[in-house]
Image 1 (spheres, one colour):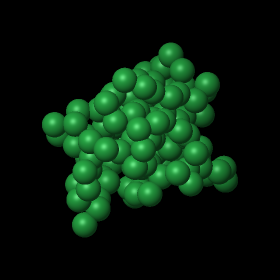
Image 2 (cartoon, helix red, strand yellow):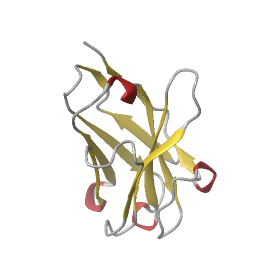
Image 3 (cartoon, rainbow, N blue to C red):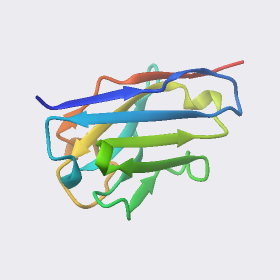
Length: 124
């Protein structure tokens, strides 16, 4: 059974940091690009970051460049999203997703498998 399970969300003050984890099972993780997406209340889901199969190619949305870092640990079937200098506008439900491809893309319709999300709230 394919599973993607996000964790690490929570409430953090502006300027703070969080590290999200995405644990995968039920498919050959090494052959999948993994992406992080987010959806804020009343807004469409958007691509935040993604990492290729061999961790040598990444994508970041302009809104998070320089603040977020994506990485993967294939031995643990896990992808991480380190989020620094968080802003209130980063508040959203964060989802990870898997795309059977070697290339990175922020296009949601390319991703076959999705997790259920983890809430990130940035507020003082």
